[in-house]
Structure formats: C-alpha cells, structure tokens
Image (tube, rainbow, N blue to C red; front, side, top):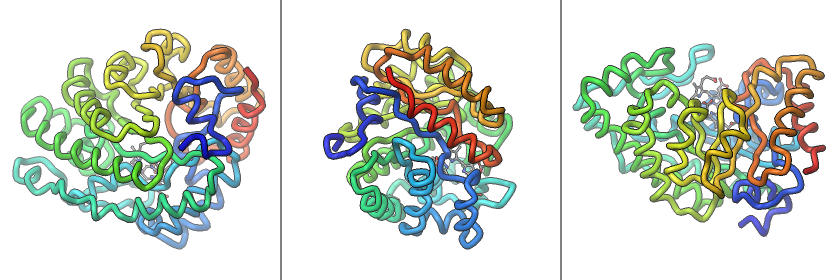
Length: 344
Ligand code: CP3
C-alpha cells in the first residue's frame, strides 16, 4: 500500500524506516477548531455526519485541504462500536456522549451483541469515498476505541471524571467486567479488519482513559484485550497504540507488539523510545495546551521536541492528546507548517 502513496512519510516512520523529516498529523484534527467544520455541523447531528459517507469524507478532507497534514484520519468516533453492540448513543452539545442504557449488570452484558459488523458498514463505505478523494496523496488512518475505554463509557453512561462506576465493576465483579471486555474486543477485531479490508493505510487504537488504572489493573483490564486485538487483526498496515498513561504504561504496551506507541505529554519522548524494543516507533508528544500560547512559545516547544528526536528513525510528530475545540486554527496551522520545514 505504502508504495502507491505520493507521501508515505507516516508509513515509513511507523515502520521505523528512514524519513527526511518527521510526518505530522494531530489527533482530533477534523473538528470544532475549524470554522469549516461548523458550517457542516450546523446542518447535521454528529452521528449523521459519521453515518453519511459523503459527509464523513468532506470532514475528513478539511484538515487535508486546510492544514496540509501528512495523514488523514477517518471522521467517526470510538463509540460507534458500542452503539452497534446495542448502546443507545447520543451526542448532546456541551454534554458529550451519552448512553441512555448503561451496562451495569449481567443481564445488560448479555444483551450486548457481538454479531453487529453489518451495522458499521457505513464506516467501510466512508473509507472508500475518502480513499477516492485522497487519490493516493497521503495515508488514511482508521481507528477504534480500546475495550477498557469503551467499557468505561458503557458503564458510566457517558464521560466521567473519576470512573467510579467502572472501577466499582472492576473491583466487585471482575468476571462480569471481563465478559463485557471480551465482547468489545471481539467486535473491535472484526471492526478493524473491516477497515483494513476497506482500504485504510494504518490503524490507531485509542485507549484514552487507561491512565485511570493502576499498574496491575491496566494489565488485567486493558492491556490483555489490546494485545488480543493486535494479535488477531490483519497486520498488513501499521498499528498505532495510543493511551493517556503511556508515559507509565509504554513498556507494557510494547508487549502487545504495536508498530507505534503514541505517547502522552508527561514524559521525554526520546527517553521513552530508548526503553522500547528496537522497531517500535513513537508518536507524540506536544502538550496540546501549547497551541493556545503565543507563536514564539509554540515554536520554542516544537523545536525543543524536534531537537530531542533529531536523528531518530520512527518518530511521528503529534500531540499528547487531541486538539481542544477552542484552540486558534492559525496556531495549529503554524505548528504544522513548522514541522514540515524540519530536515533531519
Ligand atoms: O481525530 C479526528 O479528527 C477524527 C475523528 C475523531 C472524533 N472522535 C470526532 C469527534 C476521533 C479519532 C475521535 C476519537 C474519540 N472519541 C476518543 C479518543 C480520542 C481522545 O480524544 O481521547 C474519545 C474518548 C471519543 C469520545 C468522544 N466523542 C467524546 C468524549 C466526545 C465529546 C467531547 C468532545 O471532545 O467533543 C466526542 C464527540 C466528538 N468526536 C466530536 C468530534 C469531532 C465533537 C462532536 C461535536 O461536533 O459536537
């Protein structure tokens, strides 16, 4: 696949091959910080946007056309798998995701379907439309949520600050938690394979809330399932493993054998890379809050990171987590242009 791309920097960096500069893309690059996103969002609900391939493609292309990034990411959400399994999902303005039927009992868990790939066909359709639009210019990244992070939304019924109900389940009813996690993991294998089959050039597994877990619980309730997924998906495209908490969990994440570990902003990226086995690339790890600052600060912090990573193969420039909706567009563009000027 990579040989047919005009710009395959991301693929080469993900495979720890030599690149002339680090590729750059940003988590949540297709979103609310762009006025052009609002022009579309004002006409449709978020889920309508995800489920209409032409609209999902339009939004996916916004950062490609307006920011000139080195990789596109499918416009969708990690929670669509949970919806396909039976979660009654809605996104309310200012509230975020909601499940009106949280999963908290054995009976709730029983009701979750694993035979639901057909409900996600719109994602495969969107991938095909996006690949036509990209026309071999840059790679398209597909993605899914990791079982623990998805479980947390299903149990809490939405976003949570402390994951109290999720942790209660893990502590009091670990067997029930494992049954649900296994169901999500099985759906995620099918779902990522469907995306790979439909033509994505890389995939990222988002375990956004792993940082809530202790060292032991991370292994039991998160890592084990991510490893299961990575060992069962069709490894014909590079796999990026993201978690908030990666500064602590990177050595465990490496045991799942991803091509790339996407690192939060708490650690020194070069030091993290040194601790990883040869051949695992890193992605990250600018604190997204830097993008609110004055341009001279943005420049300093990006140069600092670049100087640290100079000469390393296997470095993808990204943020430690997603772009916030009120970060000035101009600052995001400035940061991306700056990275594109680098030469190793
Ligand atoms: O990165 C991209 O640009 C591609 C699209 C994408 C979205 N969500 C679009 C989105 C991706 C990769 C995601 C992943 C996602 N979704 C994660 C993992 C990444 C992370 O940030 O940790 C998580 C935890 C979610 C769950 C989710 N979706 C939340 C908590 C929210 C509401 C809070 C928020 O940030 O808005 C969403 C909604 C969502 N997903 C929006 C977008 C563009 C906003 C929808 C709107 O316009 O109101």
